[in-house]
Amino acid sequence: MKLNKVLVSAAALSGIAAAGTAANADTVSVKAGDTVSELAQKFNTTVEAIQKANNLKNVNFITVGEQLNIPTNDNTQQQVQQPQANAAQVQQEQAAQQAAIAQQQAAQRQAQLAAQQKAAQAQAALQAQQAAQAAAAQKQAEEQAAQQAAAQKAQQEAAAAQAAKEQQEKAEQAAQAQAAAQKQAEEQAAAKKAQEEAQQQAAVAQAAKEQQEKDAQQAQQAAAQKQAEEAAAKKAQEAKEAAAAQAAANAKAAQQRAAQQAQAQQQQQKQQVAQQNTQQQAANNNQQSNNNNNNSNSSESAAKAWIVAHESGGNYNARNGQYIGAYQLSASYLHGDYSQANQDRVANQYVASRYGNWVNAQKHWEQCGWY
Image (cartoon, rainbow, N blue to C red; front, side, top):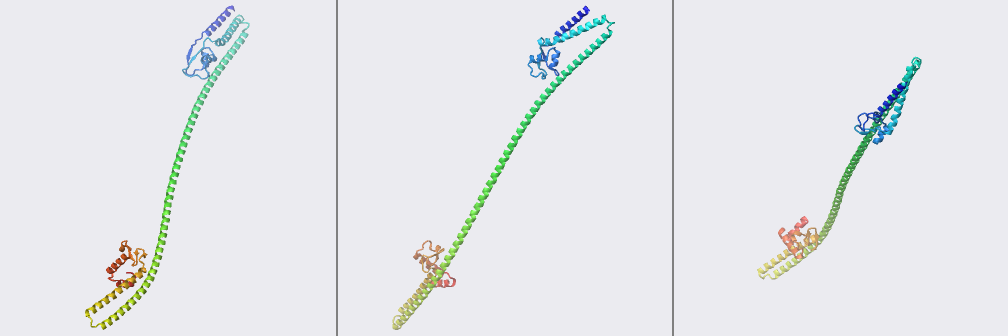
């Protein structure tokens, strides 16, 4: 029994020594699929020790290629390993004691050994179950870590997508604002152009209206002037007719006086011819010629006076449009000289060149109403 105990103790010590000299490394490069818990289990340390040694904020988030410091002689590790080693040693000692007792009391305690074996199997099954549970918990923790990492990544991607969406919305809003501003500017330009065109049309209409009013005013003025001219012409015509009638009466009286004078002169001449029958025939002929000339001059003067009376009433300052003076001659004949002497001279030249004498001019006036 003592030998078995020694062997068991030696085995337990060798197990403790083996546990104390497990393979490890100071620095580990993280590979795909590595987790902090697996590395802690692999290198016989704790998750807290690795987290503390590397200042990890989240033990469930490590990246491939990341360099991790693995503590190997930490007190916390020894505290965790020591209970495990003691438990294993106790179990080994109990098993050795049970085996020694079973050898010495094989016949007597066969049934008890079987029961102990069953108990050991149950204990082993329990330990296996606990180990499986621990592995499942570890896997669940890793899955949770992976889920958290995936969720964090999804959150980051969602945040990036949201930021991109917001940026796109801002860009679309800016584009819409720019398009609205451009449309507003175009509408303002179109409104301004329409306003300018309307103003131009209004200005044209106003100018046309003013021109129309001006034309109407000019037409009214022309009509008024025409009426005034017609009234003046009518008045002048009436005055002319009155003057002509007066001149005709005057001319008729002058003709009668001239005829009486001529008749008296003829009687006187006949008496003189009768009394001076013996006088020279040449003197009688000269006297007769003088009498004929006097008669002709009297007729010319009477005809000239008659025309002056009918044209202007004897007014050398009379005007009727382009006709000026006592004889109502055209201004083009007088050449700007409206004096009485020039009017008499031009009138004599006009009548002599057109009618030959004033008597013929009077006859034409009586037939046509002008000379």
